[in-house]
Length: 219
Figure 1 (cartoon, rainbow, N blue to C red):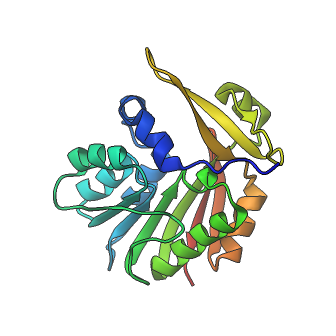
Figure 2 (figure 1 turned 60 degrees about the vertical axis):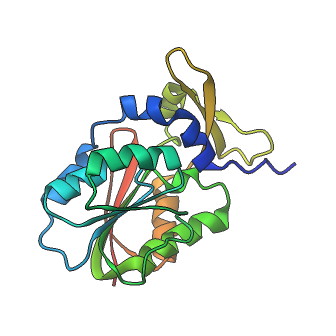
Figure 3 (figure 1 turned 135 degrees about the vertical axis):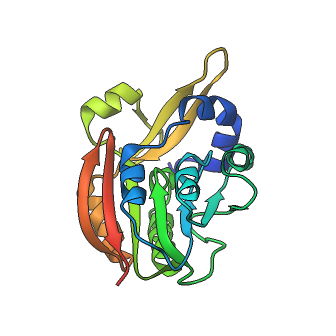
């Protein structure tokens, strides 16, 4: 039995305010990367920008930012965080509303693992490559649910009808309902294969907390 597709936009719309309350601080591997970046010809494009916490760091450093997300409610929160001079678009990582070669740098943090279909994950990586100008860098990360301790701490469970790597992770907001988020288990090797298959060069890969992270370059 094929599992029913999960729309991440609907999921995050249902938990947007509670999610924002616990995800206000940017991750250090993102801030370190942004702080070490030189002048860019194009904007920083944040794919799956969510509540804008990482995009705000880029904007505060004087970079032009563009955020894309499927969640209307998270984008509304992001607007309050990043101000009016930053472009925010409702859009899908698999078909970005961004021109080819337009981005000076790309963030795709904690987004690819929410895409259920294998072809969709490939499309998302291909879109990162398409919008990233030649010579540009991108940071891509996924939740390290292949680590049993991380999966246990997340209360991850296999999705009915999935192949064992399709997982549901509950979101428990205080005083609110429990909402299941879809996540795909992606190992560091699988992530590297996805990125290389999409035309990107992996410069460095590492683990940051409970995340597999890769720094990639557009040839």
